[in-house]
Amino acid sequence: MSEPAQQQKNGHLVIIGGHEDRKHDMEILSRFVELSGGKDANIVVITAASTVPDDMWSMYDDAFGNLGVERRSHLELSSRQEANSEEFVRQVAEADGIFMTGGDQKRLLALLGGTALDAEMHIALKTRGATIGGTSAGASAMSGHMLAQGRVELHPEKGSVSLAAGLGLLQRVVIDQHFSERQRLSRLLTVVAQNPYLQGIGIDEDTALVVERGVGIEVLGQGAVTIVDGRTMITNVADIKDRDTPELIDVRLHLLPAGSSYRLPTDATAPGKGLPLPLLDFLEHVTKRNPIQ
Amino acid sequence: MSEPAQQQKNGHLVIIGGHEDRKHDMEILSRFVELSGGKDANIVVITAASTVPDDMWSMYDDAFGNLGVERRSHLELSSRQEANSEEFVRQVAEADGIFMTGGDQKRLLALLGGTALDAEMHIALKTRGATIGGTSAGASAMSGHMLAQGRVELHPEKGSVSLAAGLGLLQRVVIDQHFSERQRLSRLLTVVAQNPYLQGIGIDEDTALVVERGVGIEVLGQGAVTIVDGRTMITNVADIKDRDTPELIDVRLHLLPAGSSYRLPTDATAPGKGLPLPLLDFLEHVTKRNPIQ
Image (cartoon, rainbow over all chains, first blue to last red; front, side, top):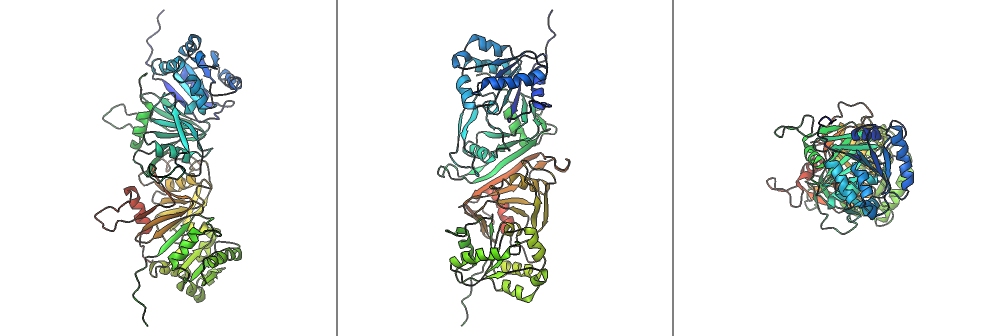
């Protein structure tokens, strides 16, 4: 019996700022499950960012179980060989939802970056319209340029952050998490001051930025998403010494509280209804249907 | 013997974010003395913001003494009657530099606001070109709209701040102090979200914004001055409930580290050399030669 023609699925990213509720109403995880296809979805949890993968799995095993998901499994990656193995790649190829836990994004990329599993995640999102979620380190790892290291100082400070190559599921942004709780705005300003090519995204704890490729974004949870846009910024960062605070003039800042949602204009000749125009460019970047490279 | 014609003095404000160094190099207090006319200046210290005025005076008595100022005195104000008395007014009328200590800006305004002493401070600044300094509460009190009360929350929160009438030595801004140290950006964003007529100025500890009326500004000390400009902002703050976090789109943020200085264009037809244009409007507000009302 043939299935009815399915509606084209766009693929979603659920980018979580850490400490999402896993025990009570689980608003964010519940949305992740729903976007993955609901209780019948096949969900794979990648714990590679963490040095305690079994503890991580146990936590999400419980949470997804409590949300009624039966087909849930732990993709326990301990080597790049495994990330290139047919068995692991098949696990992702069959997943409707792929969830990356917290830990250290550098560890995650060291195990996963550039492997067949990484490529299969791009296929899952971009070709099959699967949902990819990530929290904390799993969120930071999603963008093409990833925050690798960064001191949190009172002020932006030249040379206090370094970037590395992330998974590239979205481009031209850099993602920080635990954002308001750990007072990371000055760190994100440092990134943007030194890398105005990127827009900075700061996601609070128990808060998610949900991206539907080609369509729009939504903010879920308890906090807010902060966006730092330095494209029109004037700065002396190129001329100052390491550890000095740069002059920053005309940084654009957006604060999107939970409950906000924005859609790309569907008619290219008319601005989107309810879309504030200063957000248009951000929205275009973050929802862009980048091809599989 | 007649004095040689003096150069017109513009009047300076030295707006300090609290905890300025009073024992070592005293960069900020030393500049305050210099702008007041140097060691020969007559400096008056107003401690009315504080409930321990003698302790405050003792601290600044030492500091200004160590800077070589001999004519220094304590204006110890304990009632509005005193603030309307000839003796107290004369003390300000003869001062080259007037310094307001920390404490509580509401207390300072309750004693000083609208009195003859208040009027004499305006004359000192605007007619005689005296220097007025203030630190912490003494800084917040300077603007026409003054932060009176405000919770510091993780996010901007509707209704979490209230304004009151300040001394009005400068207009269309609101000043917060201990800014980076006490993580007050979200509070300042709340002010600006609800009062986009005002530009927010956040001054760090041991940092001063020096304003020369009609001329320009300079940042001194160890930290930075943050400016939050919400004039082009898009927000839903009018439509949300108290304690909710507003959506804020396109807030302009400027960070001016110590060492920065900017001058108004002297030729109205040409932009100022080295003045980033997004700062022009701020500079015009803050240096404006408002008349005595």
